[in-house]
Figure 1: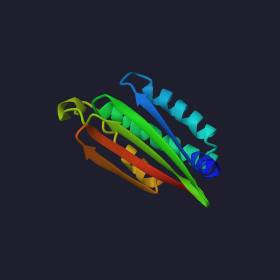
Figure 2 (figure 1 turned 120 degrees about the horizontal axis):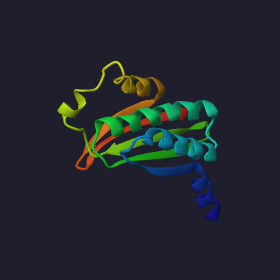
Figure 3 (figure 1 turned 30 degrees about the vertical axis):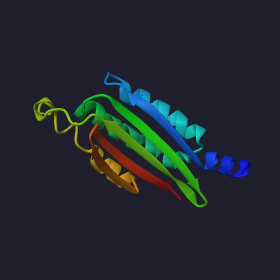
Figure 4 (figure 1 turned 180 degrees about the vertical axis):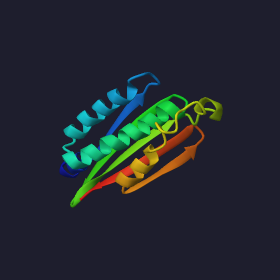
Length: 139
């Protein structure tokens, strides 16, 4: 029984990090995510892709959504690799008038980046806001 529990604990990891609505948040959260991925011994290539996804999802929450926001990462190892799930939950979109002043040349590519890197991705609406998520498979 103890051996099975130890195997399960080694096979699944989770990390939760608040995303405060302040300047510099994306780089701080990205560095924290990088440290967690290193602790989990995630392959460098997968970690690099994951950090791009973290940056895009967190940036979206900071710029386009109301606080509070939270990053949640989980890593489930399998026999042939594993699955890294990245999710950012926020309190929902800011009003359209607040977004209208943004330069379209500087924003709007995050979803395409996430789509290109993720095995699966999506968005879930719930009473507390929105969760945008992506899964990256390690093979």
